[in-house]
Image (cartoon, rainbow, N blue to C red):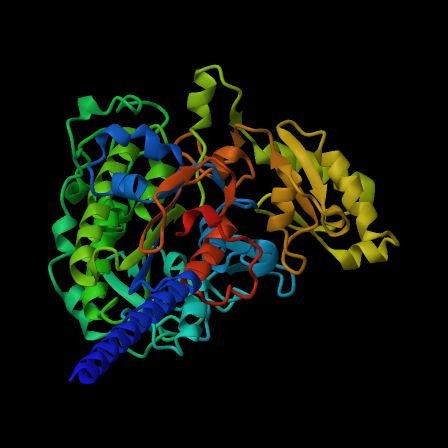
Length: 556
């Protein structure tokens, strides 16, 4: 009997040891898997078009707890985040965020650019090989075919054997097409005019899914055909300039740039549904559609990670019209804060709190209105191209006997006719240098670089580093111009962007959710670091043109 009791006792001990070993092995395997990768059900990439970093701090006291503050307080804030290339514009910006590299590699050197091979202008997302879906207009003839490399969304699709979904959404076509990558299940953008519909391209599908058709036929778009008033008492908007000033643009039909903006009254004269783009209602409509996509595509419903790419475009339209110091800009960000809160609450409910990962950044920042800066005695102003062109043409005729030696002047780049240079029995590099020295003598042109310099040197910091990262050997021009800080070639009202100056490069970068630490850093991070950071978190391959580095401090 005693031996039997000891035998049972020994068996029990052995079972306990085996159970403990099993649990220990499972915990060890779980820890090892956690070390290798994080598995959110959904990654949400948010690009806020034309968002400066200081919009976070400037409007902080007006934000609620569940939008920007949630990302900052419960996530990771990269305070010294920059675009490391120029031109700083929408097409290159969205592409660089999602490819982990710069125009030098991914090839999207502008929103539009002069194509050296065809001698024609091309648009970064246009593609006549495909047809519009959801509209009879040409607004859907788009694809990512000019983007030379893969995106983080492509890599996730490849890693999951195409089981993980990618859906990309934006008011602007390029804000959806480029982040969606080459393999997106769907990319949708808003076609305004007299239609007011979300559309796509036959590159993705033959017809709109039912959930998109249902959204377009609902009354959700019509609800925004209303006056634009301030979210809060306008007298509390102390972080912005006066409501009525000379630095802001006007909608057609307005005599003063002041609240309220009567959209129903302005409707016909301002492109009908296109009018919504330049109001905060464009962002709200984008949020509505993103929530419809969340449900309609059943995103984040299983253990295979999906990706939802959202670009809020209206902030750019408003910034261009009113300038970064306008009360309209403040209001659009306070309303965007509410839209973000609405999005995050829906994600909590649909996907599950701590089951999704978010990053929020911009595609570029913007300059304050130079006319305003000048009135504050800050060096700033406008580069007048007409006077320069006349003087430059005179120089070309005198020095080379023809103006045809310059084929195109755009995006602060000059494209030369290499055949004419050859006929003149001159070297291209020689002509580039002659023109660069001439242009450097013009008022408000601060720096000039040649393609030869971009080819021969490897810059590691400063303006030439930024220009080189934006210089694509096959697509960029022969001469690169940089204006004096504070000077732009633009209208006297509203803000713009595109330069390598810090006011165009300093943008937010916030991470939040599963696999993300809480904290912040003032160490420099760069836009191409985003994609490899997300790839490292997910344990997947980097996009195939990646030049950025993972931000180790962000990841748990």
